[in-house]
Image 1: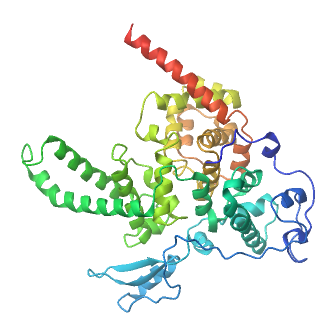
Image 2: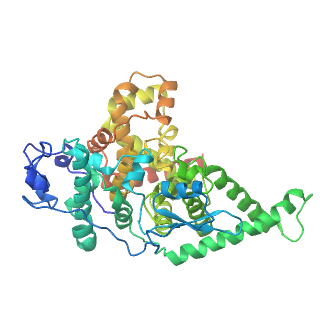
Image 3: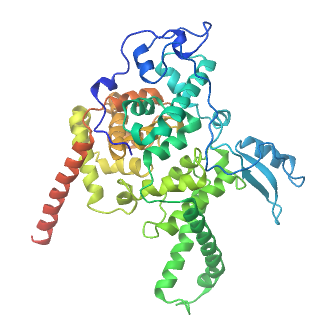
Length: 473
């Protein structure tokens, strides 16, 4: 992830005064009046009188499939409609059981049009809000222009450009939805060297394991006492595999229940979600599967091919603070809570005192917020904006976002009782505005990479001393 010790105060307050001429964005005179900073626009690569046409974005790792390939005759009208509804896939026939077979089209991600059907706003809404305009056509044009900056200037020169201020500024404005997956992958990197071939091998391994324990589970469930021929360890592992598979299957329809693509058993997205989760269990059996993981994987699948989503998912969960939380490693989890509490006290002293007085501890809300990376708490649009920030800054983004949420809700929280706060922090307001949230997050000054490292080191020393006292009373 791109390294940065927090955001300079000059960036936190938005743009300075100034006007942008319509020609700055290559727009006609009929477009709405704009009020923003011409200097900022030029920094982002849109020089005066420069016209940028929307780019055609292609990806080398997209599966090949004809855009106008027709479904076979055995596909019903309903199945064809389902295929069209899930833009990005086409029906190509039925398998031996009569189930519809789907193939991903060459488009890397869900289309902007389909995003709207899902109830998600295009990132152009956020970009346009930053410039104070509301015209729908302009929003789309603006998003296309930002996408072109990413695809023509930044991503092709990533080794030189990844740390520049333009990347940071564009990430905070909202990454265009059509290239969000590619940008996320670039920001994250691939330290584990996960490949598409490895993902395929793990998927095949998971499928074989599933078939094996499907055959054996009835034998285990009906057996009295020890299961002959297994041995204690093998039996334990098999039972764990069955339990994990059941847990994943139960969580699939609960993942973003408002999205049909994960509820529908015939949806290719649901199948890919199962594959990513089971592949991860095969890759990191000591971590296994925990509730909440499905939300992380599902959000990645909205923007990436399954192999890329697995790469990102695996790198996220095996680096950063996540592995400690999913394995519930102590005192590591306590160390992160210690850091949050210190940041909280510095950034929001009044609310911190109120929480202390009522007995509201960080473990009551921050653990869940971190483990789901805010997926189960915020609207999808807000979550995607937070993830843009997370892929840019890593762990520090999590703690800044946590404080940003508390800061946004501070006035209301200060009036609440213990029970009201406990409920509010686990059921954030569904109408949180993504731009307001991002402004609140960017205004947080207490958190930086350096401070986080120092506090974790300090917390480690504190808990080591406590451990020594407990061992030698």
